[in-house]
Amino acid sequence: MEVAEDLTFDDLRVFIVTSGLQVIPGDSILMTRTATGDYLGWFTLTVPAEMESRSVLVQVYFEDGIEPVHNLRFALNIVKQDGEAQ
Image (cartoon, rainbow, N blue to C red; front, side):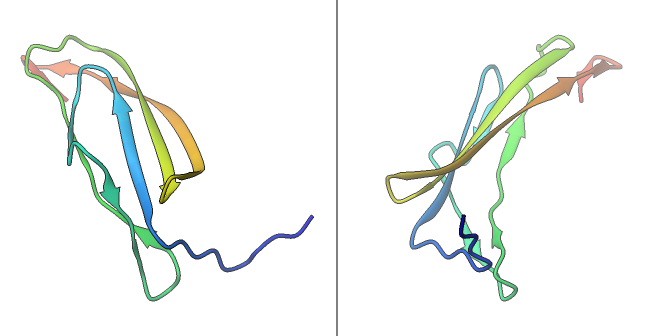
């Protein structure tokens, strides 16, 4: 098995899929390569005020152009305190 120490992508993008939360930006996140060779991109998840406390599944898909690269999932716990979801 060969492992590449330096991975480079031509068009690395991230797509966020979740239920009940607003994702900004709504389309995809363009990942920018940093000077250290890492990739950086930002997104925001907004919780509606009326959402009750619960766990929400967030799925993250990484693609280079149209080629899938990696994906991950995590549970985001929404806790309502003092009438506001946090």
